[in-house]
Length: 360
Image (cartoon, rainbow, N blue to C red):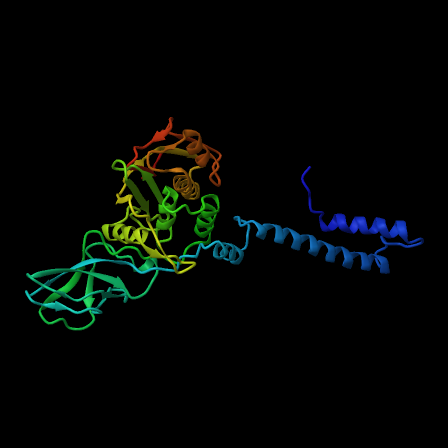
């Protein structure tokens, strides 16, 4: 039988019984007796002790009920360091005269004031030049869509007009790692201790890169001696990574400084790491809700997205029973109909995602 922490009312009743049993002629139930006052104070103190014990129990093994600071401490003790906020980066193009030099550290400003800087010096060999910039600040707000213009903060001799963000956009900007993402990485490491090149080692390394939220590795991706690695960024509008993001994760997995120890670690010699991107396979169900309102639609959309993040994987399957449960258990939904009536599957280079829902 599971242990149940007594409530304050039960502790008071127990105290009254003890006083009446051990102290002759006492009146612990009288409204204004000394015994009643002492019993109330003692019962409240005992209840505080029980509550503190419950709090301690929630901190011993890190879980979703643990306090944030203790999840961070548990993670640090096991070498899982919370990812800091990161800055967006990517390629921009600018119309210039041949021979024009873009100096390292050249500043460009977005319309809302966000500053970007060049990483290296570049010299144009034609009337157009492409170069990489990185945000001077951090956070998801630094991500920038394609075709957005960045204005030079100082004159660039030989340049005409502004720098224009290329098709993949400036991406990789992320806020400080959410505590539940840190808990997931901590639990992943506790269940899969590092083994110097197992598939889950590659997944763990990828997840250490700011912005990466889910990662998958597979042995023999292109035959013996190869390891395929892919990932997504769920906090960005386009969850499929850009080429600069793929390059950054690849470089990190090959060799990086361990966040906890500072030692150089990474992929072992021998296996070839192959980075690849997934193709999204959108599910576009027709759903009728009872009651049908903006709140229930939002709740169902959120519930299906949670299911996608928790259960979808390359070459995986979303069970129809899980989809139905996600809709039925969304806040406010009493009944529903859904056009999906079977398990949804994907190939090994596809990822299931819920696209536009048609509300019937």
